[in-house]
Image 1: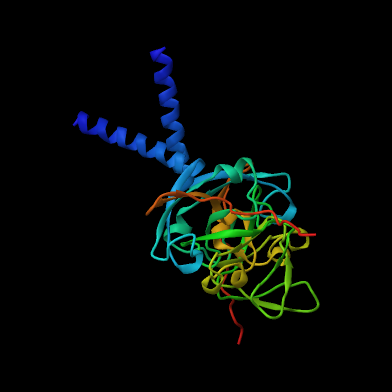
Image 2 (image 1 turned 135 degrees about the horizontal axis):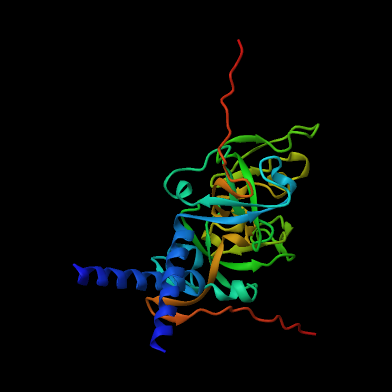
Length: 158
Length: 158
């Protein structure tokens, strides 16, 4: 009996350590859907995301993040940050009637890479920073690769 | 050296267990400010809040909750739920121009008990359920007491 108790205690300790790692450093989750094509597959990817950037640094435009869905707290969404607090962003770039919005303090404007098939901030508005869980740094499966910010400076031609 | 290592391991295990309890069962935090008078003190209270209602049941109107501030993810707010998803609530009961809003799915309408001095959903709109950390069940310090829902059925006089 004592042997089983020791094994159970060890399992609990490992689970605790993994839980701490997941909460404070990095974890992985399942992202599926067409909203992030071509960056992420429609049939689903396992992506790794980290909590450190949000805690010690700042999330910036172009970062791919995992967030709790604003309309359904039991679901996660994987979107890209288009606007940080204070930015003036276009609400819907494909709309003929261009409207702007200033991103409120503490909020982010999220959009999927596949604008034609993405439910994002164009539908549910700016997303509060407290809903964002972390920044995606890699796709783990299938075809593992690093996922970068991808933002490029605009070079103005004179 | 081995003795110190064993003590460190024990401290780590206890911290892990406390962390799990805090994340999944209940924890306590500091709420201060005039927005929840007379329920909570202006100079600050330590309140205990639990995560179980939100996970296994549903938060309801009248529940006092702790949430991440929508405008500043590094701060917490303690407010009362006035509207659950689908409810039609009055935006500002003390305003001469009465406006209504239907609480969107997955969101809650939060207001402080001290309407005259509370920054709440009247200022920052409906709060996404993912920002709500848990339901307050007791004030731990000073003067410990249970904190109840307080909602009463309206008795219609015919």
